Amino acid sequence: MCAVVGLASPAVAQRASTLDMTCPEAQAVVSRNRGIVLGTGGATYDRFVRDRGACEVTEITIPAYAPTRDTPDCFIGYRCREPGRGDRFDGF
Image (cartoon, rainbow, N blue to C red):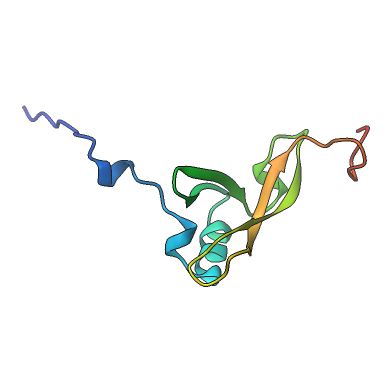
């Protein structure tokens, strides 16, 4: 009989950060994943998606920008959010 015990270490708990990537690398990470949570500096993080298919049925996508190693405001994909007044799907 074999028992496996998993220990959480700080290295395992760390989230990939856009600050450690170039803009094209961050774009590729989001593109490869349907939706992914990435750190964006310090203790901040956000969920980025490649298209609306990763959002809830009632949500829309908005362009998402994040700081990367080489670009302070890199377009890396989209964020999901509920539409508000004036959005293209308002009232649906």
